[in-house]
Length: 193
Image (cartoon, rainbow, N blue to C red; front, side, top):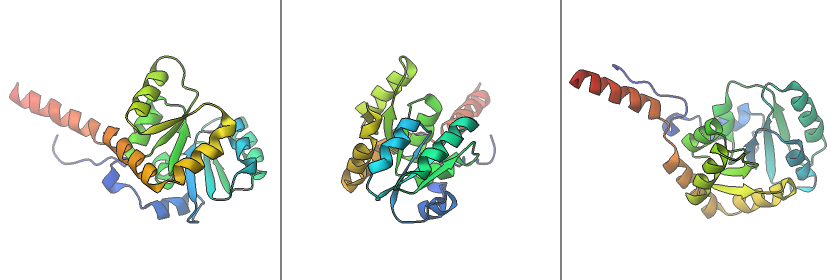
């Protein structure tokens, strides 16, 4: 329990957004969002305004990555497709909005980064409860139809005050130092014990 560990999710130590955007392949000052892919969502940007960029993460699913790359190549907006990455924290730094299912890990990572979410397809149970919690606390919006994604994202990004408020709400929900705080508490209890 001696010393101090700062995880890369700590907001104060996140790389500067511009540098992270350059490493993500999108150095331009346009707005962008991060998303683990759904092909229908990527296709929904075929008629999108050029004011956004897509960062798509397919994970270890190589077939999905190939399909996503094919769909992204047909878009009028810049899109970068990644497979499995070990720098997801930097891709989130480069994003203005995360479009994703509200799974526990993704939700925790996004909130630790102060990254608002546009929630898609929560499964009953944990994901649905995560979605309700994020919506009730102002850190997310809900996307019901993939074709509505460009409009919803444009509305979020087109309102800087609303986006800033959502970022503030996300940071309030995020606990990037939770593991360190738990270890510190256990050590204190052990010493007192």
